[in-house]
Length: 127
Image (cartoon, rainbow, N blue to C red):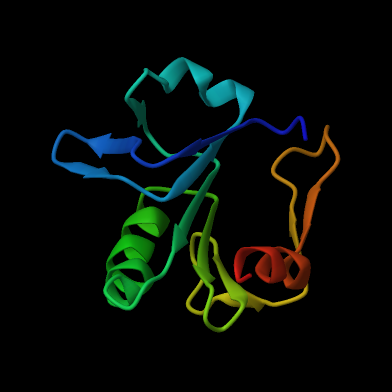
């Protein structure tokens, strides 16, 4: 898909000098390329994806979510493999959009959306 570039961990997102995180995956679009180095992205990416584990549930759903919303990350996905759904958060949301069917990401109106069939993806991952 030609929306942008996906960068897996370990890759740092630095919002300020004292505020940096290493999400599981980030996606950046062409306009964000100028804020990218070989080790980090300065400022918010177009999309942040965290895959929750037992030990990261609270951090991913509360602390990181609040940080990403405050820093203007347009979309934050919390992937729950056990529940087989994605919690989609956007700035200003007080509750997630919980998606278990088709997950659609459309960050740029000039390009076709990315559609992910979650049941198929989870079936592949959970083999």
